[in-house]
Amino acid sequence: MGVELTQETLDLMRELTEANGIPGQEKNVTRILKRNYQGLCDSVIYDNLGSIYAVKRSKADDPFRVMVAAHCDEVGLMVRAIRPNGLIQAIPVGGVWELQLLSQRVRLETSDGRVYMGAVVSNSSKLMSQLQQESVLQNSFCDFGFTSEQEARDAGVMEGDMISMQCQFTVMNGGKRLLAKAWDDRYGCILGVEALRELRDCELPFDLYIGADVQEEVGLRGSNTAAAMIEPDLAIVLDCTAANDVSGYVSPTGGLGEGVMVRFMDKTYVPNRTMQLDYLKLLRKNGIKYQWHQALGGTDAGVINLSRSGVPVLTLCICARGVHSSSLVIDSDDYMCARSALVAFIKSLDRDKLELYRNNNR
Image 1 (tube, rainbow, N blue to C red):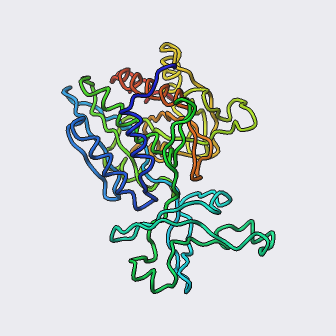
Image 2 (image 1 turned 60 degrees about the vertical axis):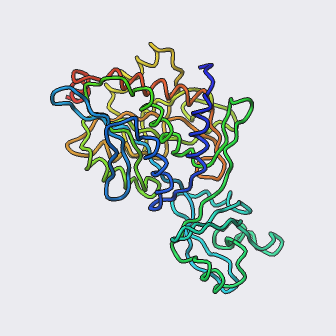
Image 3 (image 1 turned 120 degrees about the vertical axis):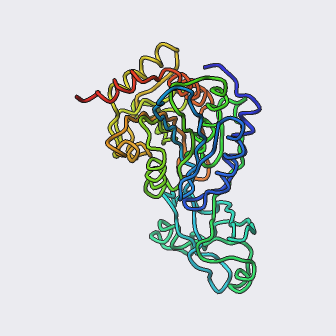
């Protein structure tokens, strides 16, 4: 879109992408979100799993409810066992891409808040069979410098502690591309904060809930409890999906710089077609670049869509290279397209459109 990211946005991106939060241990992320939500909304609420939402109340009589959902967890590792020599055996939490783990820098956070930096290590490839080389986590361990199991125990390490992959937020090529871990889905968390900033002085005919679900990466769990708490009439899901353009972009695989993604199907969700076509008209009217997309995975839309008696849901995604690894790359223009699209679509909503979407398949 030719608009540069502000320093305020870049600072928020750095803080949220560098924060660590595997499924079930997302409080590092939600605490940052709470701090950023305050002053932009009327209240901040949580479900009992830890999903967090900023609530912007409408002055309208009998307002309906719009839910804008990202997810705040990232794929990572968890302490499974401590070996006698002090090395940590880890298990994946979420769809970790194991082939990219070897030699990666990792961070361990104990239950009492102590932090240790280390790396994923293994024997030399010369000492392993081909099968062992392909089974990364079964033949690799996390080394945090402990020389014995007792030393690790004395340092506060125990089973279930979070181990997260590390990647410093980096602005690439003058800001055209952005490198970080956890764009899936800190992209949506960041976008939610920025939407609240832009809508701060905007009066809406509905109560707006913008936030982030927990435990998406292990089965869309937080969206289930968050939707039960909010009881939305309409929802927008923000997520970061996998680009498939390393060998060249062919629609609808997902390409960096090709714009916001119009997802027409994935394995958990078929969109409300009336709502999607209305969204498509808005993108064209506002000159927002977009690309069609068919996803092999799913998002929280698959759960929210089936809550209550059925909820019209729109997915508003961008793509990244390296999803579910330690290093993801997004295109800054794609992010700006998504930001413009989200704010414009929220502003376009009213009760007549809600009823139109509800009558989509009647």
